[in-house]
Length: 348
Ligand code: DAH
Image 1 (cartoon, helix red, strand yellow):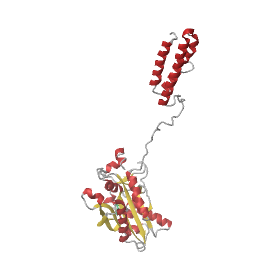
Image 2 (cartoon, helix red, strand yellow):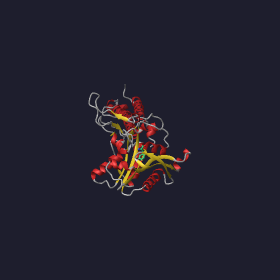
Image 3 (cartoon, helix red, strand yellow):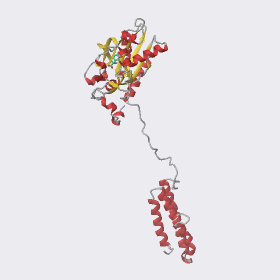
Image 4 (cartoon, protein in one colour):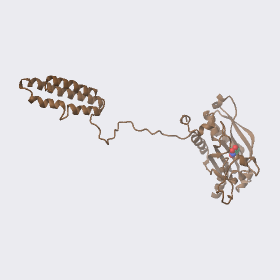
């Protein structure tokens, strides 16, 4: 190709197109090297000036200079458009790139419900207590005044465990997955007695419980309860009532009305169920929803763990966590809680 002004003007068109169309720092750098690099085409044109016949040299030199200038400007323009044209070293980190976002999890709605309810009772002076999910019959039944032959103890109503190997000796104490958190009443009283602080017990005890119920919208084989227990000299039903009233107003709203309906539980005497009515449930068009069971601790329960019913009295209450969450959030099916469905979980 002869080095003449036509060649220069073609090179100019080609170079301008290359810089203007560069769509990445890499493409721009390739264009820079091709045209403006030490061995680039525009530099070569400058170098060729001295080889051009003398009579054309002035015109060619001017064109070659113009070419370099125009392409350098085109390079600067492209650089401004694309950012720094220097390619990153292979191991470079581009700190301007958005990072890989890890999705942050959050507490499950059941955990949130437990935390909120336990928090309310903490502020009323109840300390957190826990107990094992695998229990013996003493803590799940006997000490709670649930006698032999009571339907609550039947094989069909509990997950009894075969803890030994089939060929080993039978386990000395039958074990089961606890069917209620009332077991923790017994464990808390035992622990207080062991510490010598049995004159006053105040615990709030959340936990999982298990029953072989057929799963449907309101039943599950595993769910959560929160148990409360207060033991002290001179505690009355009035104390129970005021504690529960503070609780339901805090959890369901200050407008909550509460009523006690006589009931029967083996471990309390007297026993009651608590129904509430509040603005939160207006849409249900159903006044008085049952929210928990409660009562004065039965003297037999106190005796079972070595407390003297003549010296102390107590009250207890128990509620279902799933039920609380379903009422509060308008959740229609208990199976959502264990569905692991993010569309559900993200709502809370
Ligand atoms: N344990 C009872 C149940 O699972 C709930 C309950 C009722 C607990 C009354 C209590 C209570 O502490 O006083 O149905």
